Image (cartoon, rainbow, N blue to C red; front, top):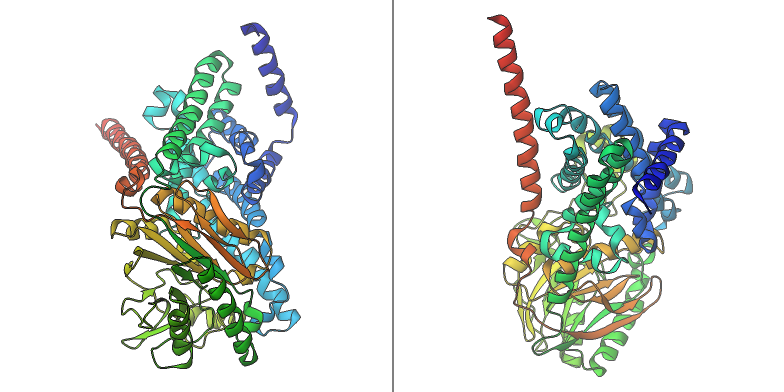
Length: 542
């Protein structure tokens, strides 16, 4: 295809876009992008579905230079639609039998969670548009406008990372999750982390738009677009090929899925059922040669001690089947209550090292700003099934086992990359992940949460043994592949061979340095703009 013919095609695309009601570009891209996260099988679309929204934003900023207030409103439209689609699976929680509420109360609570969480996420995320608008007027971008797509990618990436900083930001919808079924494109996280994938996706969309808006620079835009994509692909290939998946002496592990969900595990008559189910699959795992068996988060929602009923039950299983068992239960220490992960050895002893969940679920395990919430939204404060708020753990609590040093994650922990990295840096050779997930039933939430675990395995270069109450229970390899897996809402056990790993991924060393560099660049641009403004005012006053 010659250059002139390419120009005509691009011009036709440009003309078509100009005829579309412009404001529709934002929700259109938002819906398509959200669908890529919900269905990673179409994740390849992420590399171009943002084009309508970015086209509208770039065109607006280059032409009208709108007020920042207007840009915030446009960002609000984009992200609120995006999050409403991402969090739509809250509907599947109905009728919330596990919470002991009426159907009417369930509808109200689900609406608060769905619309409220989407709103909470959007209030901050919408700042991406005005921050980009402000920085696009700085001296560097005016001098080198081809950097505009990279600026937008930078602002978007930093905003995604910032969601990990407070309870109000839930990093559930990071763009890298959409690449889970896109082969090597997912594995670059082992080198530079998931935020590099986000940056690459947004930059490619931005460069495509830049080429559409500036036909005289389409060649350089196309080259840069291909370079960014190939850089992520190349990094993914390196990450995949260097994943230390099966070296050394392996051992057999099992992740038990009892399929005793939250709607009935809290009733007293479910105890005998749970005891029978977990012994059945512990026996099956031991017969298959398993040395380590992992149970879900609070598989029975009680305290575990050496002498109480639940403690004696687990100790009895460990001795009878000669396996090490890691299981969830409540842990009391120094007047605080934790969601814990215990280790019971084949001799029946319980390790004194108990992992305490580091990121309890807001409104599920504790109520942030409880006093205010109890006044404004009482049903939300009462949604937790626990009588008291749980306390967060403070360390990775690496525990020694006969097969290696085990790191730990519980449920919500697995969506925060810094917790897994801390475990690896503290010496974890594999990771045990116990989770509930029965709240999600068979909704998209179950699959998205499981994909987060796959991403953590790639970033950390560690096997992850994931045991969930009602699914998905799996054994995940360091390259993100799943060696064994049970679908939601069935009982059973996932069994596979795991290899303890001492080597480290590049990302485990550098962490989120890529994000910090982006922040430094944005701050430098902002300071330069401020200093330039101050100098101009001084000159005008002289």
